[in-house]
Length: 285
Image (cartoon, rainbow, N blue to C red; front, top):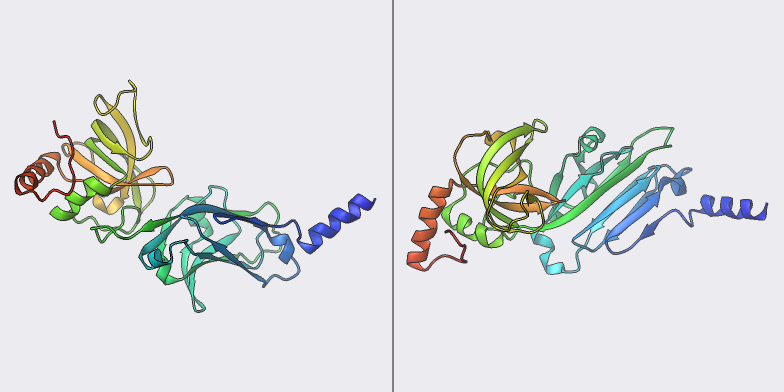
C-alpha cells in the first residue's frame, strides 16, 4: 500500500516525468495535466538529437543553443517527425510571434522542415483535446551550417532548381556529404513537394554514410544504387543522361545539392585544373 501511494505521489508531482541531456529531451504532459497552459523551457546544445513528449499538454519551447555561439547566426535547424508523432503542432517562435512549421498531418507524412536559428525557437504546442492518452509528439533535429557556396540548402524542400554556378559546383565536390556519378533509374513521388529519385551509379567518389550500396560490395567501381531526395519542381525523370550527383546526408537520407551532366562537369573540372583554380581533386578516370 505504501508503494502504491509513493508511486502516485511521484506521478502527481511530476518528479519522474522528464529526462534531459545536452542533446535530447523526454517529457510528459502529465505533469501539466491540471495546468493545460503551462509552458516548459528546454535548452539543447548539440548538433543533433531528439525530443519525445508523451501525453502532450500545454507547450514546450525548444531552444537550440549549440556550444559554438559564434556559429548560431549561420545555422539552420531541420526537424524530422517520427511517423507516429501526433498530439501537437510545431511552430517557429520569436518575441511571441508564431510561424507554423509542421501540422499533425505533416508529421504523419514524415515531412522534413527547416528554419534558421535566427528566426527564433521551436514552439511545440499541444492540440486542444480532452483525451491525451496514446499521444506522443516525437522528432529528430539536426543543425546544419549555412556556410555553403550555394544560397539554397540541399535539405530544404523549398530549394530552387536553378543550376549551380561553376564555383558552387567545384566547391560542392569538396564539401558535400556524397559525390557520385550515374543516372536516374526511376522517380517515386512522395508528396506535392518532394520526390525520391532512384539512381543507378557507376562511381561513388565519396559518401558520408552508406546511403548508396553495391550488390557486389565493391568500392568506387561497379554498380551502386540508392535514393536521392529532391524537390518535385525540379521535374526529375529517367533517361536524361549521366550526372554527377552531390549533396547532403540528413537523417540517413541523401538530399540533392548540385547535379550537372557529367560531361559538363568534366569540361569545367579540366578547365579549372589547367588554370589551377580547382579547390580540391577528384579522380575522373
